[in-house]
Image 1: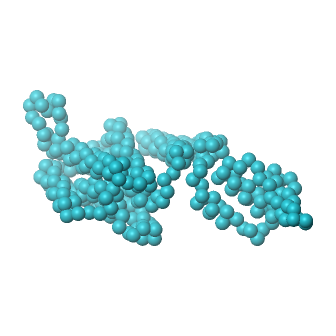
Image 2: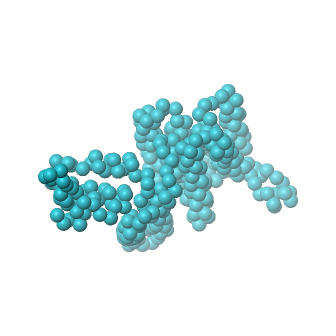
Image 3: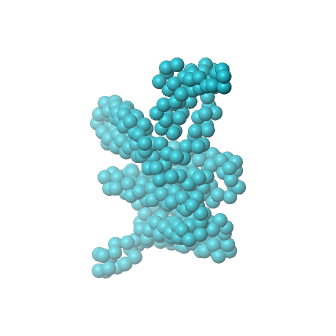
Length: 368
C-alpha cells in the first residue's frame, strides 16, 4: 500500500507539472517545447501504473502482464522521444528522416515488450520482475548473463538518451552560442541525475527489492530540468554555477538523503516498534531541517552565494519595497538588498540640502 500511495503522489506531481509547464511555455516561448509532451506521457504512464498496481490482486497474471506491457511500451516511446528531444534542442527543427527513425525505434520497443517479455510480476516481495530469455547460452552466458529485458533497459534507458545528448553537445560546441551551450549542459545534468537516481534505486533494491516499484521516480530530475533549461534566458557566470551547486547540495540533496534514510528506517522498524518509530522519524526530520539551516546560514553570507548575475533579482527586490513608508525603514531595506546581492558592507543615504549641497541622512549602521 505504501508504494501505491507513493506512486499516486508521483502521478499527481506529473499531472501538475504538465499543466504548469504548458502555461509557462505558452507565456514565455512559442509552445513547441517537446519536453512538455514527454511529461504528459509520463503522467499517463504513472497514472496507469498506479491503477494497475491497485487492480493487480483481482486480475490474472496473464492480464496483469498485458497491462504492464502497455506501461513499458509507453515508457519506451517516451525514452525515444527524449533522445530526439535532445537533438531538437540542437537543431530546432525536425525532418522526415527524424520521424521515420523515431517510428522505427517505436517498433523495436514494441518487439522487445510484446515478443520477448514472457511475464511481468510486481509485488513487494519481488519488486518489478520481468521474465525473459537469456541472450546467450552455454559458456557465453557465464560471462554475459544478459536477458532481453536487461538489453531493453540498456538500449532505451541509457544508450538512446546518451546518443541524443552527445549529438546535442557536439552540435552546440560547433555551432551554438554561449546560451545554447549552457542550456545543453543543463539538459545533460538532468540526464545524469536521472541515471544517478536509477542507480540509487538499484542499490536500495538490493537491500529491499520492493523499492524497485518506485521505478518511475528516476525520471523526476529529467522532467523538471528539461523544461526549466529551455526557459533560461542568460548564461550564468562561474561563481553563479558554484552558488547554485552549493544551494542544491545543502537545500535539496542533503535533506533528501536524510529524509530518505529516515523513511527507510521507519519502514523497516514500523511493524516492531510502531509509534516509537514514527516519533524517531519525526525527530530525524526536524534534526535534518535544523542541520541544513545551521549550515546554510553562514554559507548564505559567504562570497560564493553572491554573483554578478543578480540583475533580475536585484530589480525584483527593489520593486518590492514600499516607498510610501518611513525613510529609515526604506533605507534599511535597501541596504539589505545591496548587502545580499552586491556584498555592500555599508550604505549612506544623502538628501538635497541648501546651497546645492547634500546632507547625510542615514547610514547602514543606523546612525543619522
